[in-house]
Image (tube, rainbow, N blue to C red; front, side, top):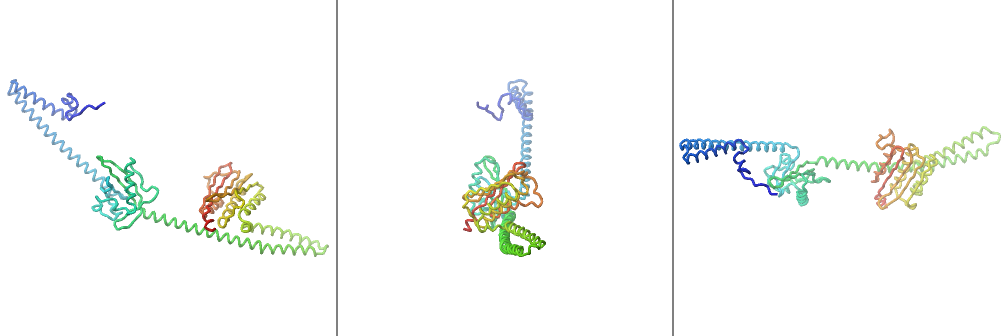
Length: 437
């Protein structure tokens, strides 16, 4: 259904005769009265009175029209002045902004360039106005930037961040490149599209992040070297305990046994003393072997991590009475250090945590390897814990486990809840193993 046509005189005769605006209404009435008086005078009805009245009404109507025109002109001037005042105020706000603000037209030429943009790019507003935004973009990024803005113009989205996944680069007037964080918005005025970009120089932030990453890498390298040195020292001490101290204790045992065989039968006190010495020596040998194994089991270096883990699991079951199942996807798997030691230590620390805290009735250890990583899965059916509980003082088991995984570029995930046991999954990439090979 078509809309009724409109005209400056109104949509209906009634509106023409009696418009809603009071001033227009007075002008219309004055004009109509003038015409009526003039027609009456020309028709011969009291000619002098009618023509005089028509002249007076006409003069009044003309005066009202001139007054209306003057009022409208003054109102228009006041409106223009108010608009200019608003524009000036907006300009001052934009110029006082700490971030650079640049507005582009559809051809990506600059139509607004605030004071912060002048300072950021080292270019005056007079030079920047009307130029292409390419002036302030490194050459290798210009084509991609133009395509990005054009694509953004077709999305219909009013605003969004530019380079959301990365920092973009700007170009100062002196040729220096620098990192910026930017957001872009678009508006349409009188059928023309404009793009406004808000920019922030993030040179300091990028430098700080770079230093932080470098410091983190150095700390990681230092921690890895410290772990290696510690393992080497543990291995040396374990060897000395096993070879030197173990051999010396074994020799003492043999001497005590010889003495017992050569002491007269009636020397009861001496025989009792030797018997107690033999028991003490046996306990000392056992303790020495245990300490040596806990420092670094020789089987780890001699037979590999799978055999060492089997021994570790068996020892855990013997000490705690908790059945522990070891599942290995391929018994022939073998790894070099530091991966082999890390696998063993992760299983060792996990079983130690189960023995100390879990109150479990069953545990399991699974070791498998895929194309990219070694995966270790340790589970127990113990009391569990709330993941958001604060860490207990002097409790570093899970933290040490995560650190060991991190040092090899891997990750460790712990999941648990009260009454439902604990699950630890560690993934260690094979990258260093292949490099060592």
